[in-house]
Length: 537
Image (cartoon, rainbow, N blue to C red; front, side, top):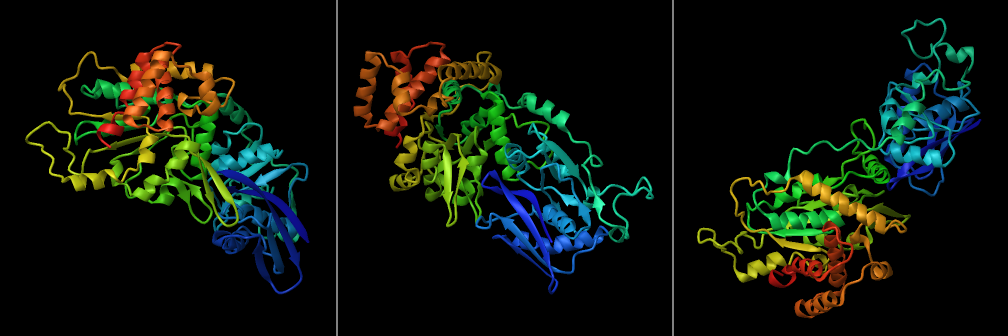
């Protein structure tokens, strides 16, 4: 006796189709699961056994072999429980499912037969749609998330007994199969009409609609006293998605300024929202049922005690780290030198490639990592190296200051476009001239629209993504600006990477100023944001 169902699991952040094959043969009663399962899958035998018995079915007293194909791919998680249980009921002749539909079965079983949600549903349902499946059977708690994918019927169930229709002699309130069902013959299902109605209409409505609107931010840049040059730098960073570092004594507002950065970024586009939602789903971060695709750009702020695996991702079967959870958003590293140097160094490759590849013996996993790096730091361990006050004098020795700064390597600093000093604020009350987040966001959105039109024929979205031939073909400097940039490279001893980043930043400044071409003033302003290469480091 042989049966086969289709299920899925996560491989990185992508769904992978898995065939759940069930074979019953004569021999001593035992159950074997093969196909490189992890501990959670091997333990599924006991969960499935208890759930089948507690739902009134009979667990087959035969030699049972369950194969998860492809057999050379490691699998983990509890998403196969429901497929294994239904496969056993089909193979033992207790249940007959519709043959005219290709259905993906996903879900974790409790001992009483109830179905628990699993992470990564969005990626799995998206895979099922691309593989030509007509429907997906999954936990009721995952229905809202699965409904974000259009073009496939989603059936949610709360209990294993929901698979079988109610018996006519049962009360209207009872659900499931009476104890004598097995003796009466198999339960034959022609379709899934007895389950909760598929949410196809809702699926279409949600998929066609734009991501939910970003709520009004409680924190606004109008609350920040002074610091107009820092706000200008943050607006440039947001307009071109450039990396930024704020350096200054304690209490000058560095953290407050960066935490308000999401308030001036435009909401995610529909494609970006689907990417971000899939990453969060794969990481198990969608705890509550979403009311649509994620529209707010992620803002991740890990503590400085984070490990390399926590930042980049890792594990036996790697999971996304903070750089992937910040995809299409902001990764904020507060007190940058307090992070371990080896942790910071792993950021160099994602900042260039915008992806993270983690290799294991059997496979390599690639996670998206298109994020803006925002950092803050003090100029020295005590924090008052650049303070202009007798009461707040620096007490750090030159050797201690050098050791503190050495935690940030030159190659990492070279990848940070804007390096801005934040002095103590010069204003102590709100000014009418202080720009609000709404005003700054309007300028940023306009700059993004200019870039979208300029790069419509390529995969580039922002100026910070330009490189190589596309950079040389797209951006042209006037002769005076080019001479200024060459003199700066020689004076500050900057790298060619810094040269390209200054050009891209100058283009962003031109976009913010609504000017089509770069002028010398734009290049000069972009150069001033690299002064810390010489003055501080």
